[in-house]
Length: 412
Ligand SMILES: *[C@@H]1O[C@H](CO)[C@@H](O)[C@H](O)[C@H]1NC(C)=O
Ligand SMILES: *[C@@H]1O[C@H](CO)[C@@H](O)[C@H](O)[C@H]1NC(C)=O
Image (cartoon, rainbow, N blue to C red; front, side):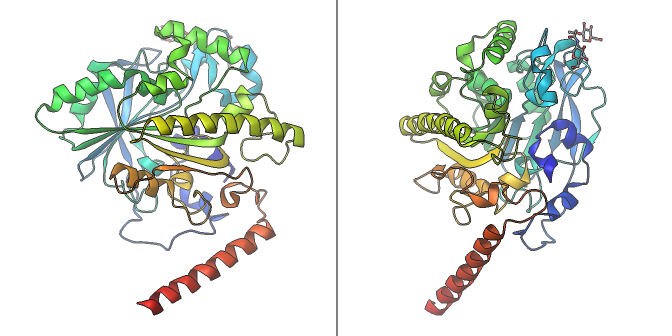
């Protein structure tokens, strides 16, 4: 279970087949088994033309051949490399800021060692009903991030065109999805990517949507991070205003859905230096720290709300739990534990689909409560024990739900 909070690709790649077991511990609201949708299919490796990782190996992607008119192009996250990363060593791998010599030898710097099949795909990239109820049959390309350069070296319009051609289909809708630096790449390059799409499919009306997951909006309190990203942006030929900035986001004129954890652990632990975060909860934080964290959370939330007011066709899903990367984990993408508001608001996958299909008027969803008051996703039952209060709450909820259902039936 613990591993699920470290959204590390290395884990994704080596964890093949462990998913079912890992879930069982805490998976108190698991939907009943469903034969039709329970089979997960692996993604298949493909190399991208004229696109290279840091060490000169060919960049790669993992593909799922679907059967609907949707195509999801997912740009993975993974921070940056810089010349000297000594200051970030204390965080282990999870700062996602390495020295370039080292990164050259990792999954984020070379495609050497990428397996032919990728079995641990989940969430938005999953293809069974349990993982990804609405988009399981969509065509998918999971683009692997391996240039240490926020995508600016391995990706460009030509490479993007080649990737689309490899999918061998004419989609009706393309979802450009990205987490972290993958998301910022989309924010900066959406116009060029759109031009590629329009040129390629010409007469066909291809709708484009953007999905941004766990992009960080504020690094202003950490000089080391600012320095690191200043080095990387210079190398990539962009400025600091192009990333971590609401100004950059505001320029985007494609309907965009933002997925955000109000307690993003990268933001709080790595960037704001709260050692109490421990990635999955705030249990160890002092009242003073919690107060500071609230201020940061509410400030970012307010800016997101303002952004949504100026973008009527956008959507937001901002949950009050400690997490980072929500769309590619089944646990956060398509699971009753993760809802806004808790227990009854709707899953991220449902809310995203409502927005995608223009089904509802309100696509702005955020928790108003602080941690841990969205209890199911707050990890207050960690260390293998379920919080008794939470347990009772769940039971009451289920009783009320079944009563409600009976009453509905009676009314009919
Ligand atoms: C780069 O990082 C690796 C792993 O953190 C470390 O072992 C190595 O000494 C570093 N090299 C340089 C040149 O900083
Ligand atoms: C990465 O590896 C390649 C191939 O071994 C080498 O040519 C290049 O200089 C390395 N880059 C860095 C930053 O270490």
